Every structure is written in C-alpha cells, then in structure tokens.
Amino acid sequence: MSDRSRWVQVAEAGTLRALRFGGWVHRRFGRGPSTVVLALAAAYYAARSGERRRASRRYLERLAATPEGRRVLGRNRGMVGVLRHFYEFAVNLYDRMVVWGGALDTLELEHDGSGEIFALAESGQGVLLLGAHIGSLDMLGFIARRYDLVVNVVAYYENAERINAFFESQGPEQVRLIHLDPASVQAAFAIRACLARGEIVVILADRPPPEGVRAGRVRIARVGFLGQPARFPMGPFLLAGVLECPVHLALCVRSGRARYTTLMRPIAPARRVPKGEREKHAREILARYVTLLELACQRYPLQWFNFYDFWEEDAA
Image (cartoon, rainbow, N blue to C red; front, top):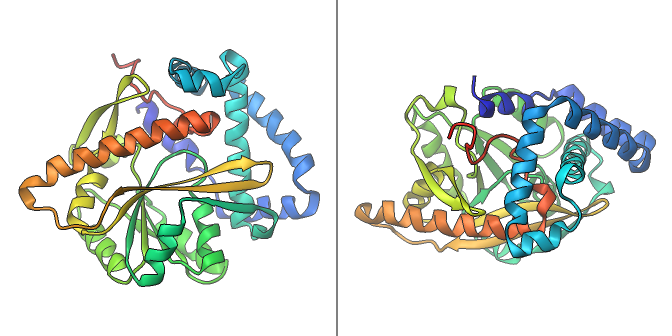
C-alpha cells in the first residue's frame, strides 16, 4: 500500500459519533482547555509518525526556498516548524468536530473574494469551486447554513450515504456529497444537474485519488509547485471545460483563534469550450490553480495538510 493510500485511510478514519462528541466537548469545556490537549496530541503524533514528520519537513523546506515563504515562516522551520504544522492540523480537525457537532455559533467567519460567489448564487448561476487540502473545506458547510446556499462536495466517498445522513440530521439539507467513481459517468450527470439548479459544486483538485480507486483510469499531470514537479489530477480541470460554468478557487483558512476566512479567486469564466480545445483549456486552468495554491501556502504556511510524499521524492 502506498504512502498516499495509507494517509487517506488515516485522514478519513473519523466516525460520526466522534464528530458529535467533539461538539459536546467544545460546548462543555470551551476552547482554552481543548487547545492544551491538541498541543499534546500534535507532539505525540509528530513523535510517532516518521513518514508524516518527513513530509511536513519537506513541505516547509520547499516553502522556505521561496522569498515570501521564508518571510512568513520566520522561525517555524526544522522540528519547531513540524510541531507547529501538526498542531495547526490538530486545530483544524478539532474545529471540524465543532462545526459538525452543532457549535457553529462559537466560530467567526470572514470573507475574501466571496462577493462574486454570492452574486452568482443569487442570480441562479451554478458555480464550480476547486478546493484543496489547505485549511478546512468543512467550513463551507458553515457558509451554506449562514447564507442559505446549497453545496455539493465531490470526492471518493465509499460511505457517502452514511455521511449524508449525518449532514441531514444536523439541519436543512444544504451540504451533500457526490461519490466520484472513475469507472462511471453517474457523478458527471449529478454534477451537471446540481449546476443547472444553480447550486455550488466543490471538488478537491490538489490530490490524485487513492491508487486502489484510480486503476489506471485517472489522468495525471506533472506541474511545478513550490519549485519542484508535483502530480495533480487532470479530471477536475477537464470537467471545467465541459460544464460551461464559472470556475473559482475555494479555500477556507484559519485566520484567528476561532476565526476562519474564505478565500475565493476566479480561475475561468463560464464559456463553451470546443472539444478540440479542452485539453489546452484544462492545462491553463490547472496552471492558474497551482499558482493560486502557491500564494495561499505563502500566506498561510502551516495550513497545507497533504502529509505524504507530495513531490514523490521517495519514489525518485
């Protein structure tokens, strides 16, 4: 089993009971005592997980090689940087439990570039948002509830029905999951239907699917990211040229103790792309997406949560 596949299993190993429990702990004891536990958990995880520790160090080294990255990292390098990186991830997981545990009112939300998304949603125009494992995608659920938006998250969810049932139990059905199977076109039809209804569709586009899911059916592109070629899935960017809808980058990052900021950046306008130009169009969108990811990493350096050999240096 590859490092990426093991990481996917670890990262997605939470349970619905754990989500509810996290919300209860937050309401009962508050954020202060919980952060102490998070710091201890991050230190323990850093000590026990050599692969994740090395992945974190490599990322921080690549970021420090850029002038802006070196400036924002400051002293967060070496083992100190790794510990801070793991702590930020622990806080991210904790806030995910807070959000889906029902304690949304304890978090603040700010916007950076969301106005166009709200305007499109109000006009009934569907939007494709390309996300990444930076910050917390779950905070889009926060946005959906607060602004009465419908968000559809596309990913490889083997237990999508169970998670959807949990979302529905939390209130209005404003966050739904669409399972993406490379061997089927069902997801593509579901995505098109969501956009036709004027809804928002979100796809995480920074990480190729697990090898067991790929089975040779998913195209991969190698693109320079933080000075070194990295592998990105082509599917989301090829899909963008078929759907004829606006395409934006969508991130939600922690910008304060209990505050999150949505970062929305336009990548491509709504237009019909001729079949013969879709490959070129997809690569252009991918290039813009990667450039925006680099800027986000330089602005929020410790919120990159791909803890595996992203640049495949071990394979090399």
